Structure formats: C-alpha cells, structure tokens
Picture (cartoon, rainbow, N blue to C red):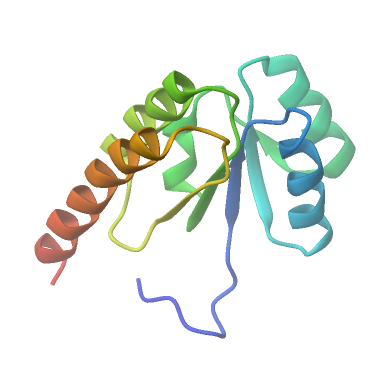
Length: 126
C-alpha cells in the first residue's frame, strides 16, 4: 500500500490521559481516528462509545487497522512496552509517532526497532 495525499489516513491512539485525551479528540474531530487503546480499558471503551471509534485491548491490534499510530503515555517503560507490542504487526507504511514526555535516550531506544522493522518489511514487500 502506498500512501498519497488522496489516501484517507486511519489513526490509532494509545494513551488517553491528561494530554492524550485531548489529542485523540482532535484526531476524531478531524475524521482521522480509527481506534484507541488505553492501559485502563474502561477509559478507552468510554471514549469509543462517545465517539464511535473502536476501542482495542492491546496496542498490538492497531497496526492491522491504522496507518498512523500515535502514543502519548506517561513513562519511559510504557513507551518501550507499547513499541514492543506494536512491532510484530507493524507494516512498512506504518508511521509511529510518540508524543510522550520521556528521556531522549528512551525516545531513541524506542525509535530504533521501529525503523529497523519498517526497513526490513519494506525490502520484503518490494
């Protein structure tokens, strides 16, 4: 799949906390939000009920339905856990965006396996 300006984006969002909730709402208002995931599943389900988006139990479910995955979680370990959950299902075109407030080292540590996975998959899908 190749993404162009005419391709509708489907965004998944992980982390419906103090910052993430507003970000997810804005994505929903823009017509981009396809699914949400939150550590507290009831919070994701309530958001999904209010907005008509899908609530998933694990970040691992998002790559199958989303071209872009945004995460906004509260701790370094959470960022790494979300990335670990996403990696087995990431597609070559999947864009992973981290908006979490974590250390620069954690951001680099999380980005490296995503980049490697996308490069490997890109070579396989040629």
